[in-house]
Image (cartoon, rainbow, N blue to C red; front, side, top):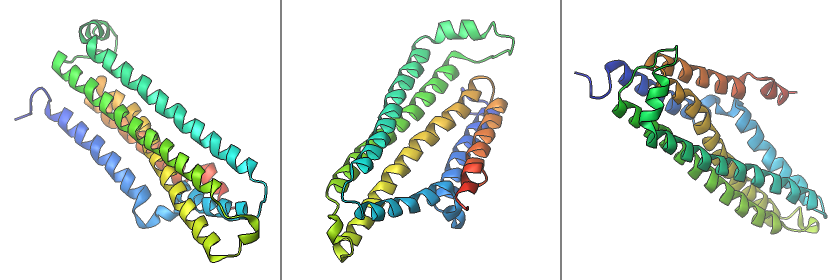
Length: 228
């Protein structure tokens, strides 16, 4: 018997959404072919950047690049808060929204309880994204500190300098990984919107999101450029 207020197809669609998100994350971050992803390729260049930074006595450009990365992360964190507010507004205005969607030609038919559950789920996704972006921003701050503590150019060939490069690059990669998690949540939130139309559309939009993200990581022109 279906679990109220969900129908059987709703539960199947939601299960497919969770499985697709988890499966994609495992494929990109833990599967044997993860080293071929665009993210992994960029992680290797973080080490290259840190080593070349050791060769420069003047490092203002490096700090400017670091600041731009922080600003981008702050933008997405702020956007997450707006998205959370929008999802909660939809939840608070359930009756008005249902009256509007009932007149649309696409024929959305849903109960008040199911609509509220869907709205809460959307808000939860954006809350997750906010925490990821906020933590990524914090990690980028820590990376800035490590950049400031980078050994001087005259000590670039010492073991301590290499250890600092590896330490900074690992923290840098962690900051980028959490940023990617936040962006992934945004993409899957777009797929989640299909559930407001129908569970069939939900499954289709989820599949589309997975395909687009996988293509960008493993088969896009940006990925091919890393092999030149």
